[in-house]
Amino acid sequence: MNQPTTTAETLKLLLAKGPTTIDPIELTTSDVKTLGRSSTCDIPLDDPDASLSRKHLKISHTKGQWNATDLDSRNGTKLNGSPLPPQHPTPINHGDVLRLGSWVFRVSTKDPSTISADSPPINTLNDTSQSTKLVERVSAEPLANLASHRLAVLLQCADKIHSSQSLNEAAKIALHAMIESTGFSRAVFITPCQTPGQFQAVAFESKNPLDDVASVNFSQSLIESASKGDVVRLAGKGSQTGFGQSIAELDIHSALCIPVMIENAPIGYLYLDARGSENAVKHDASAFGRAVGRLLGLTASNLRSKELEIQQHAMQYDLDAAADAQKLLLPPENGVVAGVSYSMLMRPGRLVAGDLFGVIELPDGRVCAFLGDVSGKGAGAAIMMATTQSYIHAMFEQTSDLGVVMTKLNKHIAERSTGQFVTMWIGILKPDANDNGTQVEFIDAGHGHWMVTQGDADAIRPKFSGSVVIGIDPDIQFTSESFRLNQGQRMVLFSDGIVEQTPPNSDDQYGLPRAGALLRTCATHQEDVARLLAGVLKFAQSDHLRDDTTIASVGFV
Image 1 (cartoon, rainbow, N blue to C red):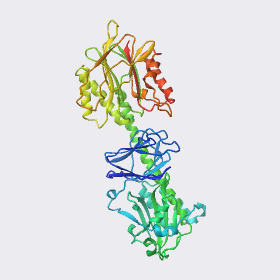
Image 2 (cartoon, rainbow, N blue to C red; image 1 turned 90 degrees about the vertical axis):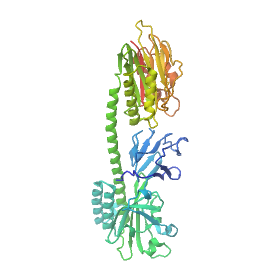
Image 3 (cartoon, one colour; image 1 turned 30 degrees about the horizontal axis):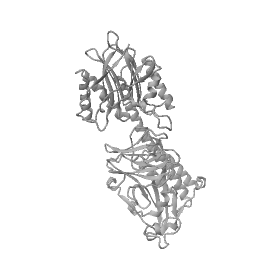
């Protein structure tokens, strides 16, 4: 199988199939590019069959590895025929095939700087202007027409290729079968590099022990014709004049080019030739070669699917461990802390959440409640969530000054973050012994997603000034504000997964007004949480929300 091309400075997405023709998409290691139907994408794509999402796929380079990330697209993205897990970067390597909707791209990272010395680049000879009339497409022929000997070899080849552990091994088996059974004298399996007309040899075999891959002269016309997915061969004799050096001067009397396909994209070519007095090629060589090419394509796809499956299993193991660790940081779903009661739920968008929630009893008898949302999704956001939540707990061991806690938290994250930030509402309550309510000291750091119940009226969000999000500017000094929470009122906090949820095929968001009207009908913490979630799910017309979703209702017993 392909090894990660960790030294490749550039990556190209070469169009294999699509509604329209586009130039190769080229990225350097500093680029992050999105593909989708929206004009705001770096690479907007036509979408005549409505198969693309607005932002469908992201290509990026991290820690020496190129990655593809499906952006939670409606119809998904396939890598070598296997679905990509949404919102998780998946390694991509040279020769891989990406399908998004009706678009199919082949990944190319093999520029001259990434080709090993023992496998130098192979150039094709430009004979297209002279040889077009001598290249013919080979029609599919029934395998039953194969001579019994070649049919037996094909069955043996299929068994061996199926057991291969790498594409290199499978290619060697395929070439050996071709040389043994077709009459061709030399065969090579090549994969394309980034430079047009340049290829790399994966495997080579010849009946002549003195031959090496440099002795093969590749006809560009044959390869170009085969790139459309057809098996092609020479239609005339090499002795014909005007055919170009690649055929005439070498007295090549037979040549065959077989594309090896994944998702309708050629990942490489089986190329064979015979010359001069070498044996005549068998009449059913093309049918035999087509079958071997299909076997090799299926094997390549299966090997890459196995690689992706292994990566996904490892990722799933890590995510399971991260989800278990997150649960240790969260309070119980319902509880009472020093007279402050609450109810909460957290539904990760991707197994692990980037949301955080906590209720902490402070040494002076007050209670701190907070809810935040880390930018991004997946494991990276979950790690930031754990860091933020742990830091808040640690800071309240040292001080109960809310402004100091947030100022130091912001500095800690801003100096260590690589572009992530955190929005958060955090407040401190002190229960009144006379049940007259309390002043709530709070800081809203770019969050805004909270409301206070009003009995028989819609819940509202009190007026506030707010602060910047956490993790952008390390020198920001945070100061608190306050509002009064009366007996019987509840604060309902939630992440942006609530207000930004949309129904299918619409940009209409759930928003604060809908949340406020729904909370009017609730009487308890548990009702606030359960009914708000149910309302959003009904609005989304789905049991799965597109983002992490956290809801908490906080008040007094």
